[in-house]
Image 1 (cartoon, rainbow, N blue to C red):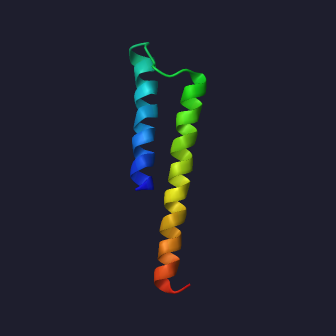
Image 2: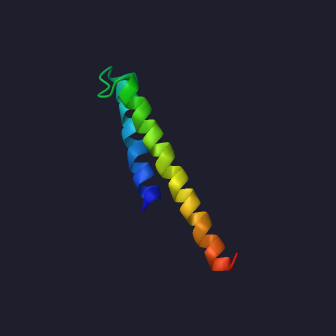
Length: 61
């Protein structure tokens, strides 16, 4: 779930960067871009930590 949310938020970031580069009409400013990328990073870290915890629990460690 967190990995899908991370991908979705990163797609928003990528769309903003692509629109800014090709059409000159980015919908987020610098701070908004930073916050979206930060949210994607945090969601990705949460997803990885949950997967590691599940793997350790499954292996009995």
